[in-house]
Every structure is written in structure tokens, then in C-alpha cells.
Image (cartoon, rainbow, N blue to C red; front, side, top):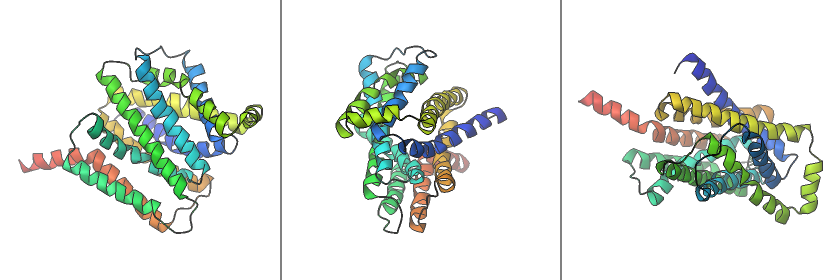
Length: 298
């Protein structure tokens, strides 16, 4: 990877890691459902002027949007409102890699390799250490569970992406932009039934610099710019080179949360974090490591 693209990769890692801090700031001003609905409304309204409509059929667009966009962020924003620290959320959300592998086996009949089984076991063990920690931290069991649900929704969205690609339809930034018109509907319906019309209206008329800056960052920078740069890197380098970069996201998230939100992580949770990262690294690099070992022994 040339120096310019390495710099772009660093921008993506920092943008997506700091994304969780901005979510926390946005949730200080807006309810979870309103933040989600407004975020994707902004993406759809602005993005449609710059990106062409994908050739993906409506059925697959809706399935993709309800899982990856609505499901993931409805659970994640709710988790952070119910006691999930932003830093830990950036790490636990990476459970999507585990869920994606499991869903691919169950739904797409993909085969699993022994090192992937080991990776899943290690990562689940690390998540268990984090979730069962009884030390005095701000994380709640409900917040932890909702974050796992967000990870599973992200994974389901990944399955939709795989199927869409296999069928020869667009599964790129165009799909991300135009599918963003779908999530505001369930988000605003949930906001109405959960929070009430008065709260929704107060959220809208109470928009201030902090809430609008949060929406701008989440929609324009983290989503449009972030995924745009990500697509650029994937078009120039093998997925095996680009995909591991996401391992840096929770590192940035945990560090940023400590600096900007004064969040603390217990020693036990740090152990769990390291174990989860080990499992994710094995899942990402295991095939390459085995290939290198086999080549050396021949």
C-alpha cells in the first residue's frame, strides 16, 4: 500500500473509531430513534444528488437497509442509552465478524475451517469475560446485550450484501446511499410509539450546534466519506489487505472514549478486550498464516 493510501486508511480508522464518541454526544441531545432516523435521512437527501440509483431490486434494498442500517443502529443507539460505554461498544460491536461467519454457515452453507472455529471460540470467550465482569464499571448487562444484537444485525446485513453481490446487483456506496431512504420510516415510527409525538417535536425544534454537528459527522464524514474511501481502497488492493484495518477501530474507540468521555475500563475487561482482538486477528489472518506455514514446509 503506497503512502497516500496508508494515510487514507488511517483517516478511515480514526473516523470510524471516533464515530462512537460522536454517537455519545448525539445521544445527549436526541433520543436513539430520532438520532437514527435523522442520520439516514441526511444521508439519503444529500447522497442522492451525487450517487446514481443502484440496480438492486427493491426487496433486497429493503432487507439490506432494515438489517444493516435500521437494526444495527436501533440496537446500538439504544445500548448506549442504556449504559453501554462508547469505547466498549466499539469493541463489542466487532462481534459482527463472529455472527457473520455463523450466519454464512447457516444461511449460505459456507464451509468453516478449523482455525475459524478456534477464532470464534476465543472471541466468544473474550466477550464472556467482558459481559460477566462484576467490577465497578459503567457498563450494564442490558447495554451489553443490545450491542451484541447490533452486531448480529450488522452480520445479517453482511449476508444480504453477499447475496446481492452474488446475484450481480450493486452492493456499493450507491446502495448505501439509496437504501438510506428506508430506515427513517421504522426509526420515526419507533420514536413515535416509544417516545411520543411531543418528544419527537421537541427533538426537532431543539436541534442545536452539537446535535447538528453530530448528525453531520455521522452521515457525511463517517458514512459517505468513510465508505467512499473504503471502496477506493478495496478497488485498489486485495480484500485481505484492506479488511484487517478495521481491527484498529476499537483501539481508536477505546482510546478516544478515555480521553474525551473519561470512560474507564476495568482490568478484567481489558483482558477480555485483548482476548477478543486475538480471536478477531486469528479469524482475519489465520488463513494467510497457515498458507505461509505450509509453503515453508514444502
